[in-house]
Length: 219
Image (cartoon, rainbow, N blue to C red; front, side, top):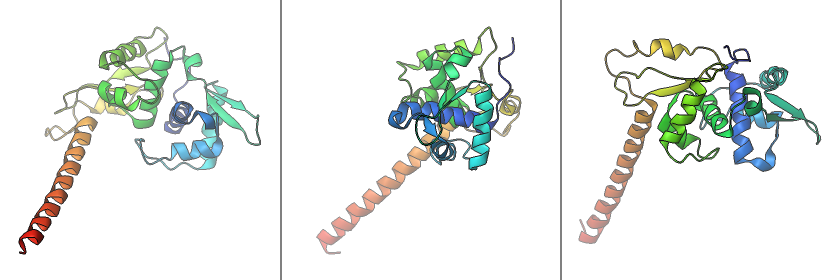
């Protein structure tokens, strides 16, 4: 059975992801104002891809999400505020909402990356727990909400992608991409960057040690 909602745009899923994220990380500011949603959608950290959406574009995304009941509006203060309603509309538990939100914000990820990146939204006991909820989302009677992508050349783990924006282009491209074997996964890139940062730190520390020894020896 098809999903009960039409395919959402990147900006619409980004808005939903921001609402779920901020509900947990800054509860005192939730529900969010339009300005807060614009800032969250355009955030440079913990976002993939990074986007630059204008206020009118975000308002348009909110209005469409409201028509689907995925976003609710409240007007208790001087400005309109917005809250997410993902779990109720899709009929999924908070754990699944957290995993979807992280994919909305950061794109396809491995189960390990999803566990780490969703830590502030829901603390999963282990990767098996994450995989359990992912499998439930992939096997829903009302239509799959996530899919496990084919393993990329050179990658050790498979990645998961949400399907609320329709079939992902990356799913079709994965088997033929980077046939030279040069492709690396997001987790491997992160590990490489961490290693480089550590090496740079070690080199700086060694330079300081050498400089101190030279000063002590008078050379």
